[in-house]
Image 1 (tube, one colour):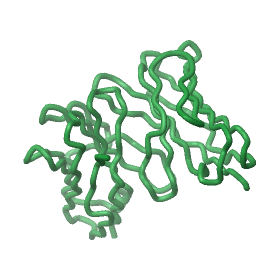
Image 2 (tube, chains in turn blue, orange; image 1 turned 30 degrees about the horizontal axis):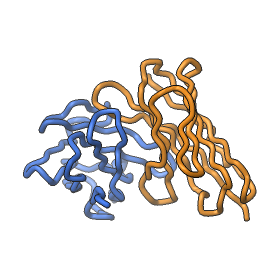
Image 3 (tube, one colour; image 1 turned 180 degrees about the vertical axis):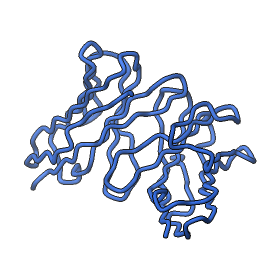
Image 4 (cartoon, chains in turn red, green; image 1 turned 90 degrees about the horizontal axis):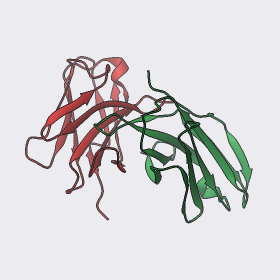
Length: 113
Length: 111
């Protein structure tokens, strides 16, 4: 059964460093998303991506964040200068159509020290 | 601010009982509704989707939607200890398909 794959599973980085989180979505999905979940809190939407451009972003997704799908398969989230408060689980998700079932990757745990 | 509300629990039920999980949402225009299961430290796993008023059954799970009351529920029949997890209610919002999640309800099924 196809699945969304995220790498790495755990990333530790120093404050101020850049990180890139990677995702390989299910091949026939067209809509892609990043969510994050701070420990003990709810899953929060960061950004949606369709047709090679951002379709919506949340207030959390400020200038420090960027997404791209450079080669038609990998979908990446970059945080330019990490802060302590960026420590969270980051989930990639995808769906075939908007507002239909979305499937999540296993997540990347980002720890900023 | 569009909100999805769930009772955080924990909801404790004995093995074999029916577990009932509830969710309310604020955006009356929402059209898609989902239940995810999340084990501790893991990612959300989709278990049910529902798009129209009424009931939708899949195995031991039944999702119920009442758009007039802005209410979604999930029933788990014959609860098993392996059902112990946090259940997340998610509502599709807008044209991009983003999901707004509730806080989640922790379910404990006791043998």
